[in-house]
Length: 454
Ligand SMILES: *[C@@H]1O[C@H](CO)[C@@H](O)[C@H](O)[C@H]1NC(C)=O
Ligand SMILES: *[C@@H]1O[C@H](CO)[C@@H](O)[C@H](O)[C@H]1NC(C)=O
Ligand SMILES: *[C@@H]1O[C@H](CO)[C@@H](O)[C@H](O)[C@H]1NC(C)=O
Ligand SMILES: *[C@@H]1O[C@H](CO)[C@@H](O)[C@H](O)[C@H]1NC(C)=O
Ligand SMILES: *[C@@H]1O[C@H](CO)[C@@H](O)[C@H](O)[C@H]1NC(C)=O
Image (cartoon, rainbow, N blue to C red):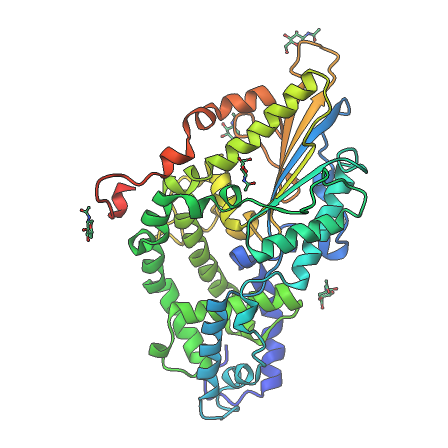
């Protein structure tokens, strides 16, 4: 990056920096576009891509599909807009010497168009994410999405989720039945926002600053310090005027402008790919300690949703065995990254050998736990239950496939992408039998606030 005081013409600087910023989009963490995990969608948003190749045996027919979705692309939250406003105002207050500090001048001239009232709402791109996802799922499972099948649609109470559910529904067209319910989308926060209802999680993780000590330590650590110094120098601000939160909001703005408006914003030019890796790690650290493997209660609080999934699978198997029509062939539930991440952790996916710590950024370069790959906007975890007609009648008839973001996942117990339902239940027997939301989420009687008691 050009040092401050170098009289680089503004235009030239942007030309030089723009191509580099194109490489940042793989590091946006939970603010990643869905296209980052499925790049083929950039060319054709309705194509099924590589995941379409691995289909179950021809003798299997899908009985039930359960999809747990994250809402589509959203606007920044009010808090993020406020912080961006502060940073932008700080740049506007600078003495105007564009030649001396082109990056700061370019950002001061950037039109601040976000308003606090947008507060995390679904963006127009988010509606498209959902409509297109619905159309791809319908194309992948035509028998399940056939006209007049019943669709059960539930959502978190958040506006962006309700809107996402409605957009998903629209994507399917008018032929599906909602089972006579007048309400199109049923709000169910006890399933979709289980974390809010889990007293132990709220007290010991959500509202306990000490629980995020690795995140705070990383914000003050050497990797972030380097990024801070570079950004301060590019903006010709004293480094004391910046902090990790302000730098993070600049990086977030780069991600929002790409996801919402499909443009490479001048905010991106503050960062190199190396900086982006550090900021991605900061985002992943937070997800890890607040939603992932950091504390057991993060994932245990999702067992209410996990068990609900298996109850519906059980019911479909029972109905199939007694030759009854399947009462819930399609269940679609819209929640948050915070809904999916704990559920995937409960099931043991994306677990690294070592925990994510403030001190092991370098050793975690090839970590599995990368939020942008797991829960981008419109992330989706799909369970498909099949009934299979085997030549060998002694084989298990019911099989399950899991897809994350439309790609088949390998089950841990077999390393295969399809499992008998019996084997799957057996593998997760302990969670199915011994994880009880109410007990897991009860606050311990003793006065515990220390992190090591979690
Ligand atoms: C939410 O889902 C659970 C599990 O299916 C169910 O027991 C509960 O009644 C639902 N709540 C609402 C408000 O529909
Ligand atoms: C986003 O921008 C790229 C490059 O300018 C363009 O090729 C692509 O079609 C755009 N995508 C959408 C959905 O508008
Ligand atoms: C049928 O499947 C069972 C269990 O997988 C196996 O032991 C048996 O050999 C199979 N029989 C035939 C005829 O393939
Ligand atoms: C699955 O594959 C991994 C890596 O190849 C291996 O370490 C693990 O033991 C395998 N698990 C099973 C159940 O085969
Ligand atoms: C628990 O600890 C807090 C802070 O240390 C204290 O204010 C509170 O009185 C304690 N409550 C009990 C029941 O001991």
